Length: 209
Image (tube, rainbow, N blue to C red; front, top):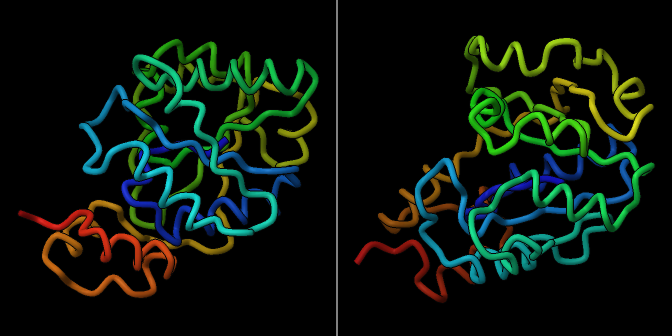
């Protein structure tokens, strides 16, 4: 599971998903847009539009799935509820992984039922090339004794572990910067999939009024 607002989805998201699948030997990666992210402001574009952009971005890429389960659920988009839904589908013995960026990881102790996340899945923290910060004390307590050194150790059990992972391709693409560029009518070529760029420009998404 790789969640987020995908506001908009960009090549950094997609390359991370592909490399996660390769490094961890995953059957598939579910990219799940958040309908109502609890710890950040409301996305610029409606959930259904962000899902449409995600589907355009993935196209026929093997192993990547645009998953709409958070859009179909009422209330805040709590990751623990999303993982619970996936766990129900896949069974208790499936190796389930939730991936998140280092910036999101720093706030993990503030999430809804953070201990429950580890009862449902293994967590993988993707290092960001432009983001480093020390761990808060509450986070150190939450992850104490859970860290694995290698993907093989993490994937040896269905849930409960934590792995910090540096992916081969470290793409420092910022959705915030993309929204700014799009709002100013500036060039975003080679930051977004071409199909996503065409759709955004054709429909005037992210354009400032």
